[in-house]
Image (spheres, rainbow, N blue to C red):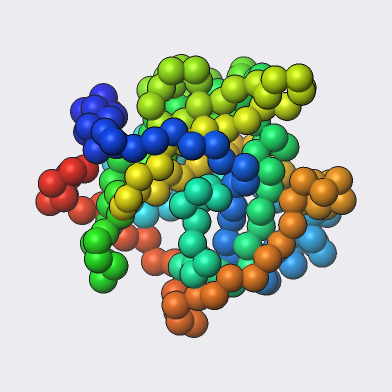
Amino acid sequence: MMTRKNKAENYIIGGLLMECTYFVRDKTENYFEDILSNKNGLMKPYPKDSHGDPRSPIFGNLDGLFFSNSLQATNCSSYGPKRFRVKVSSLVNKYTRAYFSDFYCVPGRRTPRPDSIIIVLTNAGSTADEFCRSHLISLDLATNPFFRIQRIDGDSSYGVWIVNRNCLQVELYYTEAIDIKTVIDDGSANFTDVSTRDIRAYIRVPRPKSEICEYCG
């Protein structure tokens, strides 16, 4: 785990920490419609699949929801044509904790192939937080080079800064349920449409990480 973190730190040299205003989650329309119609608007965490490094401690052991970030999300999605955008201030607070989980890439046709860093976000003292404290690397939210949280001056909310550079994706694995109806009603979130590469693009088949990448392998 520490070796992967050190490789990630070397990879982001030259990158800049930039403020991120939204977390984004792309899925099919049916996915969100089922949550709104049948689950009272509650988007619940579920187990991570084996995409990436199947040896990752969170694989099969930690429920969560994957989000991209507004700095690196594109207008063409591999996961579905419906995008849920939620302000970071609705999901992070003084109780949020962050953990380094993985640094990886997967073989594919995309060139250049981006490398991904997974940051797990928990609430202090939760069951997920207890697991992460035992199995992952805790990040100092004020000084780590990947993901920082800072209270906004003159406000009770918190902002997020994420490292940004070419060929990098920082993925957030959020371990709490989200009430979609509430954050939409209060203006903190909305849905937008994005394009997909083809009809099969968002039928996700887990793929193992590359073992030969010069950066993360």
